[in-house]
Image (cartoon, rainbow, N blue to C red; front, side, top):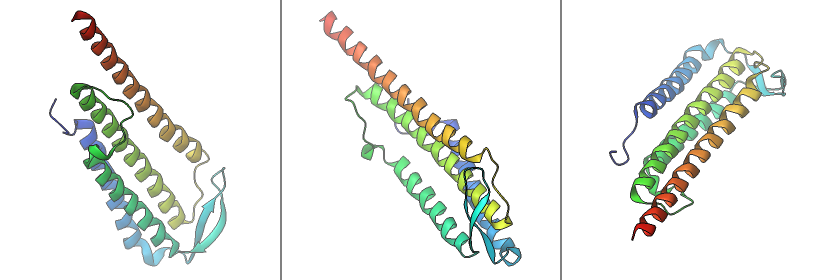
Length: 169
């Protein structure tokens, strides 16, 4: 395994995230004159607007989305700053980095899609789908749980390998 390289899926997730972010920002810029002055700024759990703001609030939300995107991108480039909870072999460490980076790429894609959906619904003055909140919670938490289990499996496999090597000595 090449050290710190991106997999095909990680690359696809990165590209889709960038396209969605750029597309959303381009749509906001292009349609800015047509966006109503008063837009939904908060939604209840059913996806219905329950607070309204000036359309300039979209700029703040777009900035938050861009800062999250850039921050997560920078984080994914420096695996040495990630807090890996266990001591593992070099091979185990590389597998953990691979799985953790995949989780980060997936999380960035999910957050980019979620922020873009909220931004575009707010700009159009529409309510969110009733399933949006549930779907976002399930996918974000599910992504974290899935990759947490994968890294624990790697750690356990690495520990078993170390025990086996010690017993052979």
